[in-house]
Image (tube, rainbow, N blue to C red; front, side):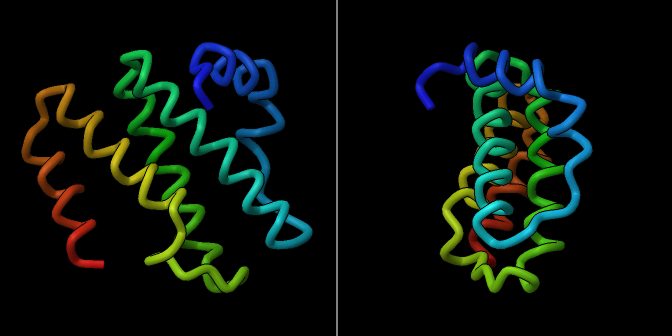
Length: 111
């Protein structure tokens, strides 16, 4: 998790497979996939690729929201969800889109 460049390289070397994954055999496979997406999103933010980080944050959050009930995931306790949401808020902040950043961070308070 500390090698943002390595994580980005791994993801982008496997982007065709990873960007098109939509079926998971079980909760563990889903969780592992979300972990990869989350680490990629966080790494993009760490390297200043804020717009791309926001795009992947939205993709990851949407997927988690969509599959949470299928895999009995409590969003309030799903750390990866909150990490990606926070990354999205920070990315908007770094892009000086403060109004969207505030909306994202306020949404964390309502959960």
